[in-house]
Image (spheres, rainbow, N blue to C red):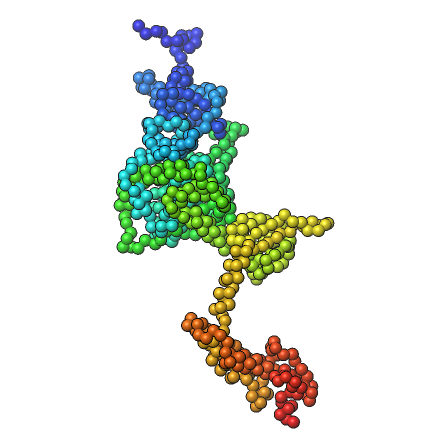
Length: 609
């Protein structure tokens, strides 16, 4: 005979639905707060997968189903569920906060990847290799945007199978593989993977595959969010996500992407409250596809890893169904090969020391470890990619280009100027572009913002000095590095060589000079004729490459050419000779340019005499 149910009140009624729901939840689940102040529950005898208390999904719906199963199909009311959640949230607030992970987590010296299966299976990767586990040693939370990962299976060379699905070059593929390895390491900033190429290069499909390897989702590609709240919701619920077909990046999104790379926290008002807030904390693995992202902010450009995709010829283009099947068949092998490489990287990583630490130094250290294991040069590719991105930024900044030209024209000591002096010294276009600073204050702000990009191309910006009292104005010291000065000098030398006179063209110079030498009967021509003669005295430009290799040494004919050219410049009325100064004729007292040493009389007066 079963015991009588415990009475809930003086009228002899049984326990309320809310009370039964609370008792059931306490029996089956542990309740706690996450580190960001959100209440969760985890099964006492199940996988380490947590359920959120807030919202209609999560523990609320699970508890309702469990109650219905235990009470012969009786359904709890919404008010009873709401009352039960309030009580359980109070219980969670008294427990010690716990850390929750999304898709990947660090556990001691190993990395744990949640396969997001209902059973809670995971993969544990360490310096000694990887292995599948039935239960994760850490707590994972999940979202509606996540899909399960296949269990990795060692089936041939998974990286080679991935290579067959992408149409980039070897350098780009190696950099992509290194980025994928880093994407499974949770506690470091990950640069934004950027697929760039013209239409028909398969950017969107490549991004879908790559994000699916790391964090499968029903929507691996997203459109650019409309505001910061929409962005925070997307980023909080996915470990890896991609912004597809980005044509321009507004300032607020550029800042949000930078913060998501290094770690971000966004405060929002809690649902159904006026003064309570929730904090969404995240550090994410991001990707985007673009033909040209437009003028990027310098800090965002330094956080990009760009993979160039090539145009796919029509004869080699594959149907999407075929690509989907090939990707699905290769996914498990690709994961296994990536985990093999990740294990090797974790093994050698303690011994990797960077002599130079670029921006995103933690990621660069992973690249160095990949290079050590594979014998690749992903570090060099990453540095080149960063320089190209910075160059693109500077190309879109007219003021930056003017500053670069100003510094390149200065000597080794550089320039030390106020922002107003810089504004006055740079070559400003006739019509000032929108981004051109309107005053010295804005010029200083732009210099500070552009300083990291300028340093990347070899121009140092130091604003630590002050001018003399009483104004004590901030001084900017702009100097070009030795490498940049050598590069600039080399470029100028090449340009000079292309425009230099060659002995192969000496006959042209000789004939032009002779043709322009004044004869006595031509000395009275008007200024127009003189200008035409002067134009013919210009040395001809080299016409062929072979001309530049004939008789480089100066011979008698070259000397004669120089003398004839000098005579042609001395014709009366030219007024542009750089070799002689004008004199007054001893006869007519008119100015003239002597073309023989000691000549004191105008040639016309001399002929008349």
